[in-house]
Length: 288
Image (cartoon, rainbow, N blue to C red; front, side, top):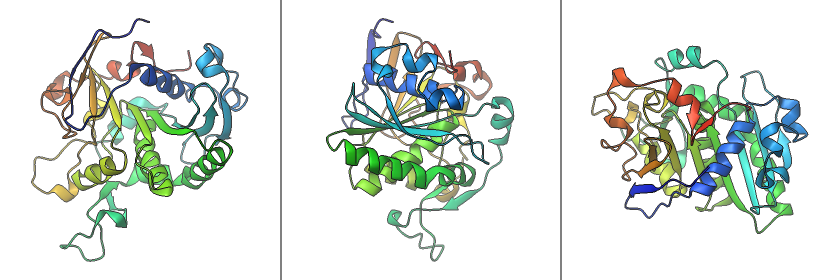
């Protein structure tokens, strides 16, 4: 596929959207929709159909657990990169309906204390997504340590589509905290909102180069919905930086707010689609 012709805008933080990196990590996100066994022995179609993908060395393939979470971690010799990848949901319609109902929990003590709620931190996150992340957290962090021990010069990236994007957000943050590094790459595709504005700010401090690709009128990045209250603690807010894919050729790097009114937030509620969620960078987000 030809490279996109236009990349407008900018987030004011110097975050750079790299198309070849986006396509590479998108293919890794697509791999998660393949059969667990084909991922484990790296024989799936997406795994083997390009040089960039073919040499990948899996360190961890979790298999789907009780919470239906699936992740893998491995090393790409082609890019000298350790990559953690999370599967999106297979039950899209049910999941989208469930996203309307949620609970938030206070997490990440490093975020600072909420003066109005003694002992709680200001960072609130979606409890379902966070519990999903916790179900693979230790395995993912250990696999990253092991892969980096074997490949100390490697860069580190995290990716995922849909629910996998939400898990990738927690993964990127906690790998960054574990390594005490702020150069972990994170590209997500169709990621829902995972926390409040304090969390979004905390996240972006640790993952300043994070990229959240939103395809056209994809409904999922608008869920859970934002409240119209000034209650920042319990109001969902995206992390930066959104890159809005308006069609196959045009990508806009949005402002650094996480909720740029000129980007996908400009699409009216009644115009948002599930179909756009299934296609990113011109590829179907399935094992094909």
